[in-house]
Image (cartoon, rainbow, N blue to C red):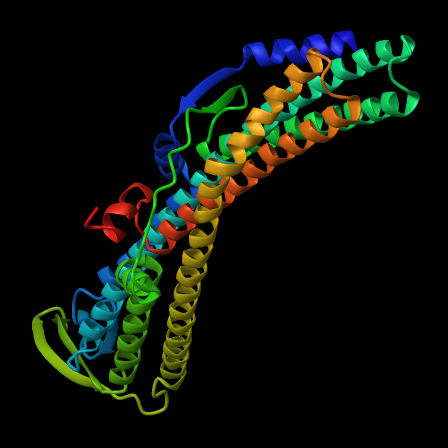
Length: 415
């Protein structure tokens, strides 16, 4: 036990601590997020498609050389020549493909921006969870320390005959329960620390330390339609869906234009019989007679249908997110204010009063357990209420694609 404990203490002493505000933690999480880097890298795909559609060429040019040996009286001669040909798109297919790829580029950029939005939300939630977990651990540690001393005092009182065994056992049960709760709270704090460190990309020997949690603002809006309108105008995932639908629509047009015949222009030259120079041009038409782009058109139309369906689903999801986040914030913020002004003050005061009354011998063991247990339970419940309110604040700001610190100025412009 002792060597193991010493090893844990030595490990903690070698770890570096990194104090961060919630804005600093969010900025770092966005800067080091692998998901964001992947989303930004995905933009290269439509950019490459757009680059291939910069010119009205249906394919790469073809350059061919030939050399022929001719045997005829009075002897053997050799002919040589070359041909350069290029298929040209005259129906505007290349331009439609380029416009389609440009829309897909904007969709990919919007998806990368939406990934930044979700990563920032995850970082804020992880920061909040760590703050609450640390406060819970501190509160349960204090409760366990008091319960342990209270149990020691109860044993002395039992030996002195001042209390009965029932009261002593109640103190023992409370001490065990408080110690167990403290251990679980420490484990939760350690898990929350590891989760935030993962999002921040910290090495294993660095520990993030939250500085403070910002105050939850008082927000008011006339109707939920205001929130929905804000979300529709600002959400990057909706913008990505709109550009994807536009790009898919243009891709259908490009596929249909591929059924129009294209022109194949060639120039050639060479030498015949070793003496005659040959040079000329040739114009042909590539006729889509047997393969009329049925597969490409079907694929493009299927992708357009999928893009339209995805946009519809995204619009519904945004409305649901906003309405749920708005309703949750109203209730959670009101509950947090009520707890902070009414319940928390009384609970904190009762913790102090029970300790003082116990020291002065004015209350019984049972009264101490009930009064202090109720007060500590109220303090722990406030932490849950605070987490719900702050989480709802972060979720509402993410649903509207607005920074939490700017949400009050936008929803309460007159304040």
